[in-house]
Length: 444
Ligand SMILES: *Cc1c(COP(=O)(O)O)cnc(C)c1O
Image 1 (spheres, protein in one colour):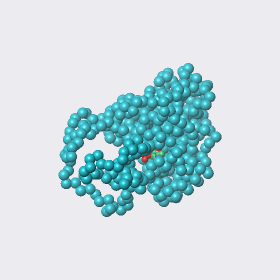
Image 2 (cartoon, protein in one colour; image 1 turned 120 degrees about the vertical axis):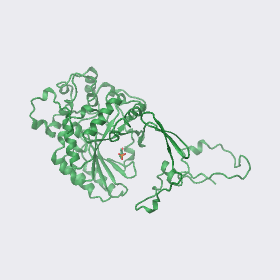
Image 3 (tube, helix red, strand yellow; image 1 turned 90 degrees about the horizontal axis):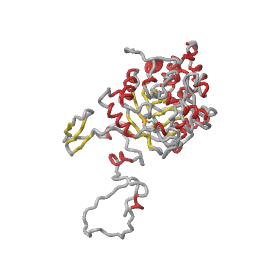
Image 4 (cartoon, protein in one colour; image 1 turned 45 degrees about the horizontal axis):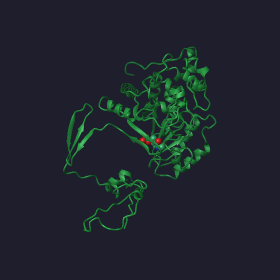
């Protein structure tokens, strides 16, 4: 691998653990730390952290020996420490804080399945993780030690997928699918593969980061039986990129699993252009393509991690053009209330006329692009499988490609009803535009 290997660390208390134990994921899982006493064998807790760890009802804490070893024990602001060790800030409520901020429960046709987008679903296969991120967007369901893989729910999910042919992409998440017993994970993958309309399977997992030793040759041999299979991992800071993670990613990519990264923009962890540029460059070095950078959700306990959205825009401004396009993620806000992911970026389009657009580049250089005058678009009808939008699926795409002319917000007609009698402002029989609303009947 190209020059400097990424550092690998073990906290002093693990110095004498034999390698075959340290490198065994089952040992890592069963030696996770979760109490004040255990964590203080590795680092000295602050008062705020100790208070949080002793508070009742807090979102579950578990940290693998491998991951806690990456923390600088002398730095209370260590970016890894903040992700897994709670502080009393978690108990501070904020405006618009929600338990289920993405309204996932409302988009669930069957338990554990979120069908929000037309052609893909999110399938929650477990509530367990290797360690727990303090800003977890699913802290309402994740971490419950009594709830594990539910066969009954799984059968309902499979039944739904069988009868829903528009789903061509299934995203396995949780919890973390890679903490499932290997047999169960394989059963899930093979059952999904039996469904002909499912084209791709994806796994969202932080296991390679929390516990890279789980990525064994056997796991990779099993996964590659179910291609096309993609995976997104979750790295927030370069300090998480170790020799072990690099090796795990190397194994996965050699097994043909393309890797992406989903990072969350977190105050005090990675809310800085320089930290993010280092992160994305270190990721492409280990052949992981930055996929999304998420604005922190409005989830309970995560208030102290939130940044203004402008910070994300500023970071994107500092990435695009300044580094390899492969290293640039899409910055997204997952819309509160269940609107899905909304991409945001700085403006590069300064202005436009009917024949020219004015653009700026990452350096502030302003240029123009002359538009064609003789453009003929492709004829959709000629293409095999070309489909019109599904009925009812409108939005801006419906305005561009469908028959709709405008979109009315709910209640629009009531607020704009001035109880006028039928007349024309000027009694001239002039041409009037006809509006075709989205789904609305044309008024007589
Ligand atoms: C993020 C997400 C997906 C996948 O979205 P992509 O943009 O295709 O990665 C699917 N379903 C739900 C509910 C999601 O939150």
